[in-house]
Image 1 (tube, rainbow, N blue to C red):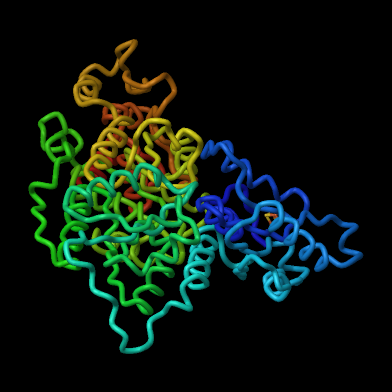
Image 2 (cartoon, rainbow, N blue to C red; image 1 turned 180 degrees about the vertical axis):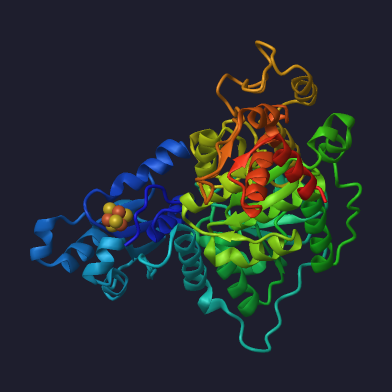
Length: 516
Ligand code: SF4
């Protein structure tokens, strides 16, 4: 048992619903108790889809447990096929159904349905939403293509003369982060360098489209959380090369094009293809004050890794913490953290994340909706860079994260929560101003948004420490966005020196100690 108030991911069968809802002609039969239909709201209210997700729930109740729930599964499957006439019926169970072990996939698969049935086993008590999406997509791709796998030694047919090379874009789904616009951006980028998109999947694809996957020259894995397993299976069985660079950020997009050029043997002039305004904006003098801003990053693995690279090498921030809740993809985050000399934070416990943020006292957080709540409580500026996200991160306007336009969007989004340079400078000089003072929010934000508060003393082992009045006064002279760090360092120093009272002298000794 684990006491949990917030979770970063839903149960594994949510992943299956995301795949079915993203596609056309695919229907999901979900063996689940009455009440599980709440998942529909994620699609109709957060994604604001104009249709219900294509899911039929068995919705068994307590009284059904006394009779045959297996019969209920079969009857519901037949009804769903008759009513919705899907091209493929996916079958899986929810957490509660897993306990009663009806094995709905095997049952429906053996019932001579006229609709092809693909069964997905969920490991509801050990896995979560992204794994569920990945497993469902993988089983769907394998189920539809297993009979087309070429015999050993059989060479793939060469691309017809004069036909442009093409790739599949794999991984985008509904309820992913900005997938709709990322697909548009990457499709346009590929087109600009002479590459076509064969199939985008799961988002918008049909079962027939999945059967065309082997026709592409390579697969682009845009979301490793969802498409890693399917991509690897395609590489193993159809010998399709895999492009792994996730093109988020200017440098990653350059690398993506470089990888594309190598894999497809194409001459791509990357300098020519690079129209993002981010490099010039971040080099312009107005961005000088961004240098070394202390930032904490926590997200799904692919967005965390991309954000760490952009923050450290494109915007000049100092990344002080990096982590993910995606255990399956944690390796890439570990590597990125190692390169930055950090200890990675791999956890799905938001309280642990909050403890880390409180300890590190960054000037900005790049995270999920959860970190937005944490940031609000601690009064730190925050930008959302990954799921889980609320409705405002499924915007009406064009807002990709990928490609060169994605980099423009990222620059604006990340800089927005920070205090602007002139204001930050004035605050250092005139602390007592009635309007622009230490406790005021950045003036370009609404009141209450991202107000960096003077953080409280850490409670870890500092119970006996007291700040004398003159030291508190001196501390207040330190600009508010680094004051938290100064407070923590001084307390750490005082503890190490066995002091119980912090006076002005201790403050300066600590400063000298840490700047050595
Ligand atoms: S089956 Fe799982 S997701 Fe559905 S209500 Fe029960 S615990 Fe929640």
